[in-house]
Image (cartoon, rainbow, N blue to C red):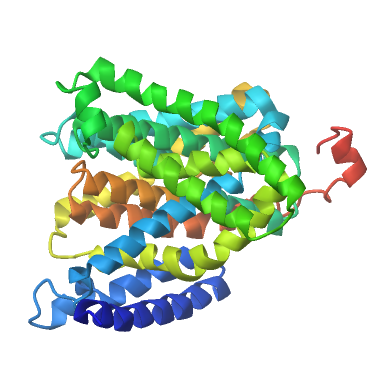
Length: 424
């Protein structure tokens, strides 16, 4: 067997064991398991061991030199976004309609604008696309963290809970689209024969039109694929062919997105999940099957890979100050944007603040966007620590503040009241 592959099997075992143990620890502490995965990567990577040994930029094990690890991590991020699409309930978004879109819209515009401002102040020589990318990171909202907190409080099916969930989903979709545009226009996206043929001179207007063509194609083809999967589900319900074909569709969308249209592969994977989510029964079945491999193997490796690639070598006072301002701005931007729009829509001050706080948590999508941007040359790797700090801080304070805001709240309304639209 190939020696590199044999070594990777050892690294593979170390990563899975450490991520699982620290993931369990984080869950017992009431924190997202993702944090445990990242910390595991930091502990076995060069960030810690490089401070106490003479191994330079090497890790405790030479994991960074493994092409297999990078491949597994890339599959992991595609699977994470695919399952996020599968779990998106479009009917929930329709239920709150214009309200969710308005809150999500300002929840994207305010962080985006403030992020550009922070980038311009701290990284003046990096250029507009780097500033834009910092804003894009701030737009992401952790749907998973928000859902778990609201569910624990028994408020997920209330008007506030539904709006927070829907707005968080819309935020991530808009953020991923903006990321794809930024990568493409900055030249950070991958090139291919198709892209170079369509737009050989790299014209910005052509790039934008070509990106829009992807969404037209993805949605148009999605109707056909949705009907096909509904037919397969009807003829052969809950058979293995459904998740296998679903994963194939995910990979196809991811490939076409990046290689044909110059859009980030994670965007293609997410839209593939959205396409399948329209067939609710089938989507739930596929989600259960895909989650087994995704969150057992690929996702932990991806998040551990983020930790492994972290380095404190470039950590200086400028990066530390930037990180603190970045975190504070990202938190306030969501409260101002989402909470402010909710207040404009006649929500009470308390409910408006609840919506704002419910939107501050950052998680998987923020980390995924960061890695894509760093790979595309939009941000230096030493600033990765700012995003990890944002995920840690918001994951800690969001549940605490929400629980305080709901401490003296009246009981959850009955299912009949909810069905009749009589929200609290």
